[in-house]
Every structure is written in C-alpha cells, then in structure tokens.
Image (cartoon, rainbow, N blue to C red; front, side, top):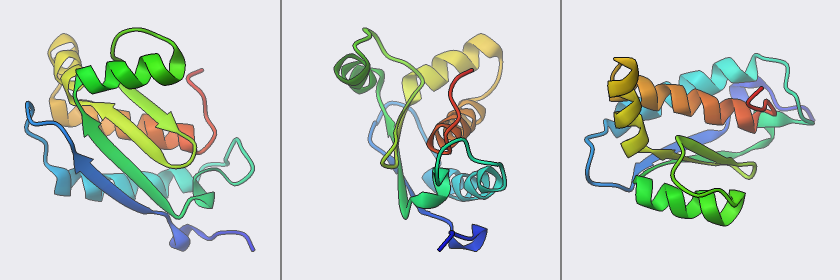
Length: 128
C-alpha cells in the first residue's frame, strides 16, 4: 500500500552539542513542515522519504561531524550535513555558525537549510 502524505514519518530533533544555542522545538516544527513539502515532490528513489517511519535529526559538533565524515565518506574534516538512508540526518552546529557569518545569514537559517538538504537526500535527490 502506498504511503499517503498524511502518513508522514515521525521526526525527532536532538541537540547533542553544547557550544551553540539551538531552538529544538522550532526546528522540530520546521522539520515536519519541510518533510511534508518534500513528500509532495516526485521522489527519485522507490519510496523516498515516504518509506520511512521515523527520521532523527541530530545537531552535533564539528569534531563529531569530522569523525563521521572520515568514517563513512573517507573524507577528512567536518561538513554541514550527512544523511544516512535509514533516516538519520547529522548536522554540524559549528559549520552552521561559520556559514552564517560567511553568508551573512543566521544560524537558524543555516540549520533549516541543512534540514531541507538532508530531507531531500532521504527522498532520493543528490547534491547535483
């Protein structure tokens, strides 16, 4: 049976770093709305985002992100977001803060951008 948009995945947002203030409740609400918007897109893989029952969005430090980046992608240094197809999205708060300064936006804006980026990856889109 094909999943309906109303059968959206449950999303949890957790802040696992302590350096940068993050409004988890606001990001939780935003994530759910962003997932609903993604579900309205034609997916690029069999069931895309709609096949997942649960998505975990984990806000972490650059140190932890660099460990994941090396372990799973064989690339050194941190990155903004890493998505695992079973429903985990790791986001670097440090990178969000650095890019907010670089692009003259806010950390909130960068975190939201990374959430959408991760959700689109789960829905089958790549960086191109």
